[in-house]
Length: 84
Image (cartoon, rainbow, N blue to C red; front, top):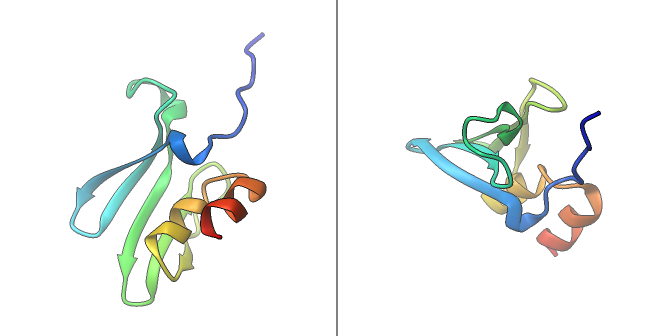
């Protein structure tokens, strides 16, 4: 039986720029070849930063800053600390 890891913390999040204004969001606790490493994507748009968390939805949510978009990939308690 596979043990479930706790949600990633802020230090576990890695942004890899794949194109100008587009980032792949990964969990650095896993190797790049492990499918669990992919958390989602962030895309800069005219409205802000669109975060798509592939663990929850395929619909992006718009945030006012890149930092707020990154915090969206954290559990609620960590996200509140990261943005305050």
